[in-house]
Image (cartoon, rainbow, N blue to C red; front, side, top):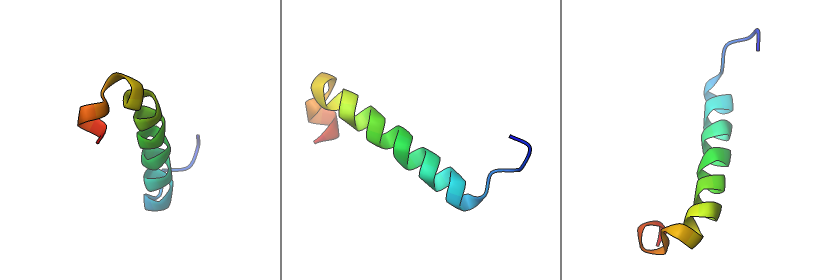
Length: 34
């Protein structure tokens, strides 16, 4: 990437990472995820 990350990009990336973690963590850590 040649451009700096904008707040919108950081939020989008964070959300996708969180969604992926929850998707996998839901099987491994159901109590933590809820």
